[in-house]
Image (cartoon, rainbow over all chains, first blue to last red; front, side):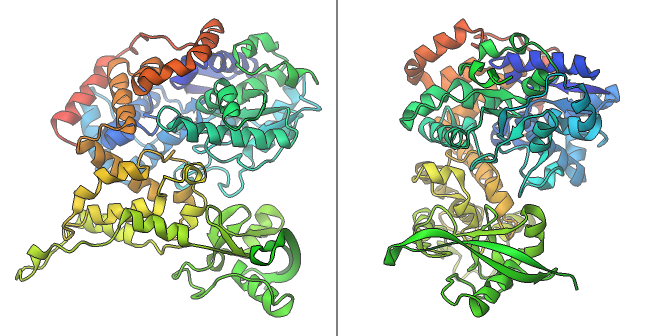
Length: 289
Length: 317
């Protein structure tokens, strides 16, 4: 298995441990990742509000790069995946838009041909790799641990653009958690917003979202929250103490990215997965292993 | 026709008579065609006449029967019961959120309507057009925008499931903003785009793009897309709010480095408010998590910059 790898900006910056963990996991699983180092930011739903055509063109440039390599795109960021798939959906269903975008790409001898697929690591593990194979390789199954999946937004909505899982009741994360030996924990808020998109604009609202859903997962006795998104990771881990104090609660719930959860089950040492970089100590969650 | 017995778990309560909230379970024989509303009618007329809910047209037009079905706001008359059973093993029915409860599945829509009033999404007739001998035609594009947004039936599904509205009561909600866009882009409206600056005070930048309003709208109005378009229009009108600054810094970051410069976005959007985070910044820095202040540009950044310039020069959006 080989992919054009698009880690996203945050996994290469403040959540670098997710980038490192993915490299270790891919190596262990025999997945070859060829990084799209010259690809630009997906726009994160923000560039789209400055100029939607520019957003779509930048993402089409990324698609064209992967097509030139003859590879599908794999990302570990559900925001990148959602934003790119929305642009891909528009381009694949609007020939006028495709023509305009390709006219711009032609100035740099590039073209988007509508052939590339964009997949999140979660989807690739389920669809391409196979969960039964993953279970076989899980030398350290996460037995006894309760994992609360935090799907967030972009990996489940809008379903027209994503065409994977059921946004009414997604199950992909639950399947992965079960395959790795942990027990999935359901709670109110697992498909809601972590608050990151408005973290710098409406901070109190963002904190209220993060704290409420973290607290809900804690009430259901989760050992940790697992996310598909570096942005959720920052919102729920780095800002957890501030968010908790806003609702006057001590939550202290460890947060990990799915690459780290898979890494743990594959027997990769916790210190190599970058848990020491987290703001909320992971030791409590790992105690049961 | 396949039939099966399905479980309906319904949240019941009567706050006016101090009746506590409780889930009551009913068994209903359903076939493949039955909607959740059909099943509620069976329960009301065959098992429990006290069950209270709104309904009228039964055809997805009036919007009366909006309620939460297996955790999401939907029209009961448009939702097949068997699909919900297949998905969740039962049909959990609860009243809509973000509005006060009256009884059982009936909520007080007053809060929703007050937000519509705040946004004033109705035609302010341009009287200068009176007496004109010409038809006031909409362009095809204007018709596309207005037509889609005019499909809203004010059922409240988007308002119920709006995550921002739960925590920010100043956020007017998806429906009212989508309605404003409908009139802001109508050339027959004398206020037109002048409606937009006032939207900042109604929470234009409070939407998180969670896409619940898109997913739950029974008429496919896609309010979040309308909100994004209103933000574009607002930026074009010189919006200098916190949210507008966030977009502008983000755009510059991508233009300069090809990537999101997290430090620049944080410092330039938050400005002096970052001082509140000094402890967190220090902690992140000591753990090697602080994003670089001056990140390197991606290879082939000239291509990204040339796309910025090209699209700007042509005035395309």
